[in-house]
Image (cartoon, rainbow, N blue to C red; front, side, top):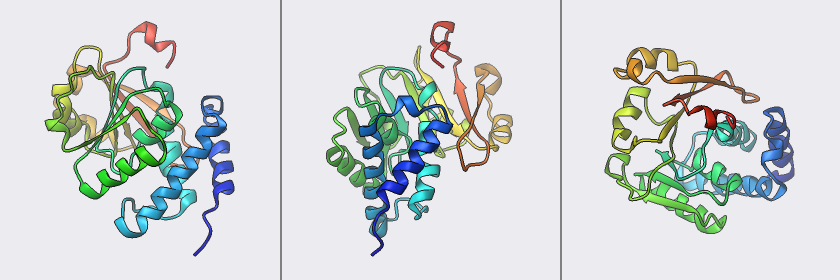
Length: 223
């Protein structure tokens, strides 16, 4: 069995974060934990098929850097990761922001088992795993932001989470260039007037963040 290339991945991750202007936001302990997350993902992937990406270096780009590109736009408060799958983007964000409450919503049993393993193995004390569909999730606490990465179309995500889109709740959807076509097929797009923010992720084609509603001016100063 080929040894997991921890130091190589750590350097790749660090270089990528610096190129994105996020190096100061991720300390040395978080870098180590992010690489450990990939080690667990690769180990579980052998038997549970959690992600189609098998190459750890591709995982750095497609999973870690792509998830952490949301970091400057993610508000304080309770976050909801819809269709978390293997923990993306919620787990990388939880590693970098260990004091923030993050709920991972995932209906598939083997992925739920992996997420619960990560919570214990990586010491993610503020992470909650909800085994079920987002339509049935009705939290008592307010949600600061709903996060989505490759979960549904914009119209689909809006429909699935309308019951959670309370006053002060943002929706952050990470998208590729396909957001243009999705916007045209979204009935509430004109009403909600989402903001489109270009994201730069080293090694990936253009990425975009579709965000609604637009934060108030006081919040814009932090991204």
